[in-house]
Image 1: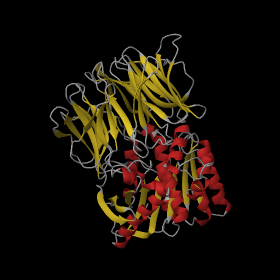
Image 2: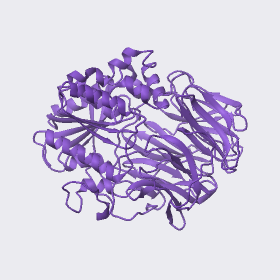
Image 3: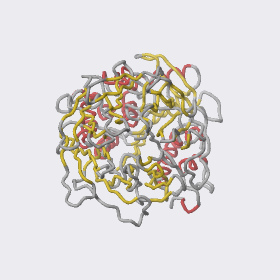
Image 4: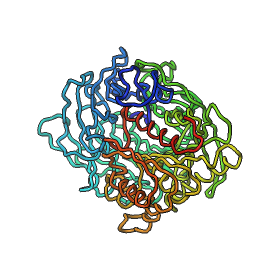
Length: 625
């Protein structure tokens, strides 16, 4: 199971034929910002445990992300999917015989798993090997003997986990787990006898517990629960047949750390490599003797190898920038996906430093480096990341780009979106507000005190500090963000109207009560955890934190981008907010697209970026085209 935390906005295609019909006013070749979005990109390969020469990888094809088979020894890359909105959720079975991918409808995240033979092309009709109705995905775990453990969720029943012999005619799925609360099938033992389920039966999916079940009949084997406010995350079982040790991420010490739990005896071994920051993810090396640890610290994620026998620690790969994904190999090598703010993302071998897969077309243009900035805030020192434009002088017009999640963090990593703004003369400020990961559990959970307002107070503190020292222009300050960042953008425009000149909100929560009514079940569970109940149970909490409540105070022009099939920040609640804004004569523009919570198609990403640039340059005094 690879360490893979990659998300991003991404980008580019290499020839004139890839230009979007109707795109405006760009001479060929495209400007650097568009080159970055159209640059062909490749994800971290996931290799087959029983056949390490075979892997599945997400890579650009035809201007969209698609699933490919990859033969390591020959370098052969064979495209398996050709879906108009792209395909980004895929895995490979342990034997390397099959690649699996999730089939939804236009990005709505509701669908079924399909599979097709390794190295088969897009002309091969994929199989539908699991006789279960469509649902939201909640984990897929595969064993050598063809058994698949499938987690599914839906409003109608909560979460279900089944085991089934994949592709066997008339195979009856065996129910292993069912609960009304959110859960996920997280890890499968090497012999296929045990499955670890992360669950939130206490009603708090921000701090899950773990239950281990028999794959034969769902019988309970063991439970691990640290109680309210302390989460446990199942990472992987030891990669040896009959070995019942489970690698677990915990937060017993105020930061996320690791332990190894023997689910048969109950013995727990804490793992302490003595590294600063939080454990982002980890995995066993294939021989079971070492761990590969991805460690978050001050907006960088670096890799370390921890020897389970002698406790020694050594760094793997680069000491700068951010690792977004990594996977240990049987020969001791590590495949790594990494980048920095200035350096485009690369997927390389740690042993050689060479690129694993090279796609046709040039690398995307580099961008400016990031600077660390700190400011005192109401909850303690706040870490921010500042990109200065390569031209112009301070005080700079600024785009304050608010990350989503909220349990995520901005990092020193390549971002075509931020680079587009610096190309146009803007500084870009990103703030790891309370609610962000990588700064300890207390910092992450502090946003629960007053959802939305806590994060905005931290963003304001860093913004104030950089305005006061002459770096940023208070009168040319644009608040932008997507998902939770889009939510905070709209809330900020209504509760801090004097601070922001313009706003750009992508796929936001805009009317929180309507969003709860329409969103997917796991997001409902997240909201109940965050607010302490549903809108029916704690209506005032949702009302106080909803951008719609403050719509009459919005002064700044705002652009809102929304996906019509978005199950996370649904379209209806965005319409409610836009109607309310327009009803009071405010300046609001909208951009809608036929996909879900973002797009994986290069053309569409370019269109969205162009819409944001044109909106800001049109409305911001003194902005440079």
